[in-house]
Image (cartoon, rainbow, N blue to C red; front, side, top):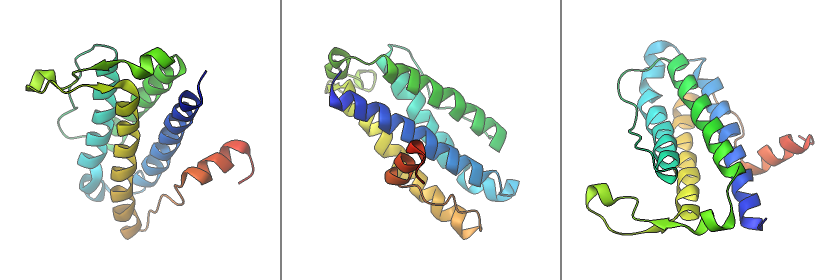
Length: 158
């Protein structure tokens, strides 16, 4: 197993951990305040669902509609578990597999699975940071979300 696959698995586990911190903090908000971040949370999990579906050759659209915190938590639980299962079986060959992921929209550009997997991770980091600012403004900070904090907690040294 390559070091990049080990790191990808660690980053997906971090992604799950960080999503949990955001959702725990978001559950402290009133329904009206939650509405201010729900679209961003649904978009972020929708991106996770979309890319995992792409890698497996499935058609997955972004969830639409109004969502309660319970609905959003359910979407993340499924998506995070599916991502972790996918990367658990990831091989070097699959990591390098390229496809024209955007062909349905008329784009022929290709990208390897590995690059798009890290796009999912970085996309999540961006949107969690945006949501964390709003949560903090509503006295519901998710706390420290650094990758190093995750590694320390995972190792039992935090």
